[in-house]
Length: 221
Image (cartoon, rainbow, N blue to C red; front, side, top):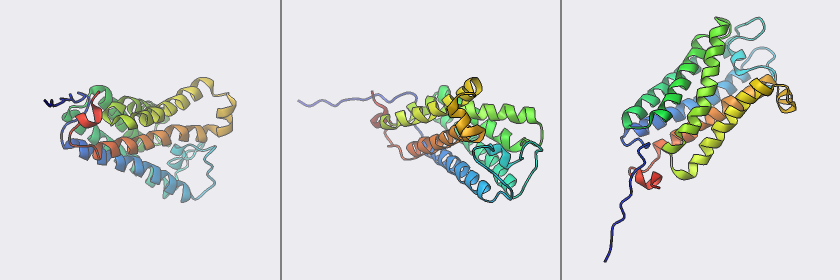
């Protein structure tokens, strides 16, 4: 006598074709951010050091908030476009049935990134700092909380990337005098936040876009 084993899909898993579109948008955003930062740094027409200068300095160099092209345009446009892509992906995942605990941080990341592009450091610094913090915090949380949307083998990768971003964000704010932070410099520390978040978008997006049509196969307990 044979029996058929019935597996119940994880309710956190989005179950429509919108999952694939959301995944492609997230991959595009993550890859786009990484390549844009590399390109803007390479084309920056003045002295720029990754250990000293933050990624936002590509749009407006402190302390005088000097805007230098083409780096500023590359950075700002990419932040806005990538933020809109992430926001669209969050909307698709919400419609597909993903839990709000996974969708809301992605929405916060999208809002923060668009804000960074619209309000670079040479505009309203208080607003720029606020949206930057929103992007950093939401990005780390999104990686951790969206881990349940992917197959089990990839979940630790997303959790690790999110945890690293959050650890450097909170660690630098609370314990900025530690040798590790002083050695990396403000620019280096920020990249340990930005790059894990961008990589998490690539991992999450790839997993969603390439997932099996049967979600239970990836998420059954």
